[in-house]
Image (tube, rainbow, N blue to C red; front, side, top):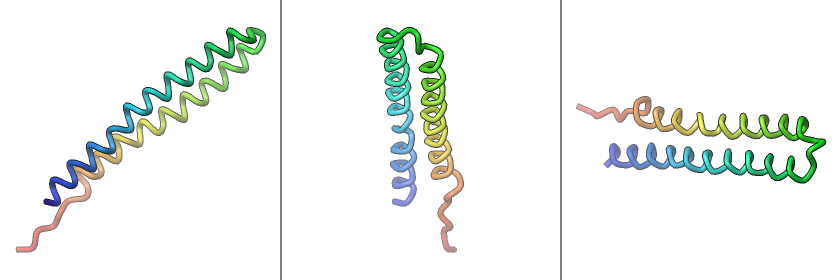
Length: 80
C-alpha cells in the first residue's frame, strides 16, 4: 500500500510540469502583448519576461526533484 501511495505522490508531483509549461506560455504571451502595445519598452519588458521565465522554470525543476525524492529516497523499511 505504501508503494502505491508513493507512486501516486510521484505522479502528482510531475503534474506540476504541465502547469509550468502553461505558465511559461503565459509569460511569453504577456511579453508579446506588452511589446505590441508599447514597443519603446521592449528591452525592459524582455528583462522582466526572462525573470518570469527563470522563476517558472525553477519551479518546473523542483517537481521532478520531488518525484525522484519520493520514489527513491523515501524507502519503506520492512521489519524482518
